[in-house]
Length: 157
Image 1 (cartoon, rainbow, N blue to C red):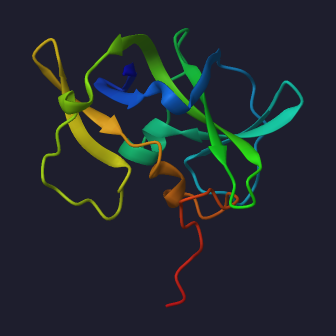
Image 2: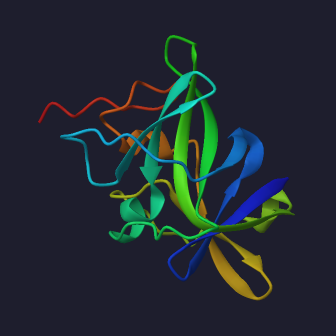
């Protein structure tokens, strides 16, 4: 299995590449008022309007630094009505894709309800790298359309 390595600040993260469509250079984003602070904006990707999430802001509470290596990771999803959907994930220093076996990803045995997309860990050069679960990530964005298998609807509390 192929896994993408990237940084948010000084911390390395990884995600499985099976849903990754492309790693694109950073572009100017259209700001949208009244969206959460981790929503970086929108851009036109080959005629499709793509929302972009700032992963560092979402996970660490600080915006991604605009570096030469800051990229938008384009991820394919399917809406509940079975139409394709692209989500952009902004990350710093996207470095490489590496081959890892499925059993290389291990769970720390923690349940993080505020960030369920933060999965287990994988070892790379004696370093523990946290895994971002792309299947669970859209569940955190209540302002985006429904993604198949996700539950983006606010609770009726």
